[in-house]
Image (cartoon, rainbow, N blue to C red):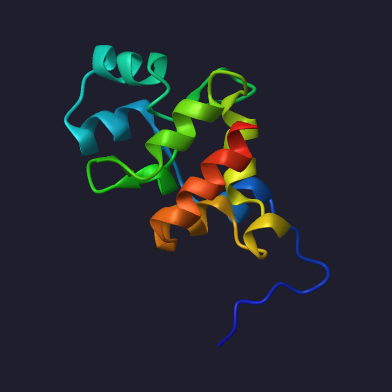
Length: 127
C-alpha cells in the first residue's frame, strides 16, 4: 500500500524529509569511534558538516558519512564551502539541483560523478 500523503496531511519535519536523517553528537561519536575533542578538530578543519538547531543542539547530516568517516570525496567541498557559509546553507546547497550540473545535486555528483564532474563542481561552489 502506498504511503502517499493526502491533501489534509502535513509533513511535520519537511527538512528531515528533504535532507534525510540527522545524527546527534553522541551518535556520531559512537559510529565513528571519535571523542568530542576529535569532532571539534574536524569541525574546525571544515571536515565535518554540522547544523545548529534553534534550541542550540548540534546535529550532523547523515548523508555526509561513508561508513565511519566523512565521505572523502565530499571533503574538498566542505573545506571550500564551510569557511564562508554556515552548516544549514551548505547542507541545503548540497541537496539543491543545479542547472550547471544538468539538474543533479552536488551530493549526486559527489556520490556518483566522475573526477572531472567533481572538479567542475568544486570550481562552481568555490566561486
